[in-house]
Image (cartoon, one colour):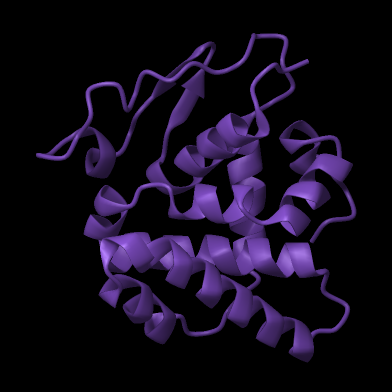
Length: 176
């Protein structure tokens, strides 16, 4: 069993998803020049520790599942990305959450069979990837937008925890 908190696991999943972290045994190897180089790089960004070797927590597999969920959302995100970029540092997270919430509700109205939590994750992942592509500086300024959006959404957190946590999220067969 993994002893990391939900928040720490979410952080590692998001790093694998957005920044191309490669998880090998008990260390993370950063593959992203966006995070590990440049004037805002933090020396410990690539030194996080993953759970024990016996853990079923696999951030890379979960990141792949999240990416596939995000790939289901095919709407144009240019306006939403611009709205997040234009916000002040203090308001970026709030705007990011608002955009993810609004877009996921709109998508659900068009697809009523879609679960709220899946829609929110898909939109938040796709919005993050679009932001990273369009404005990498946004993630240097606010690197935890997606992590905080997931951790701060009680419905999404509960959804993941009901599946047995992140460890089981990537293995659930009836997910899209």
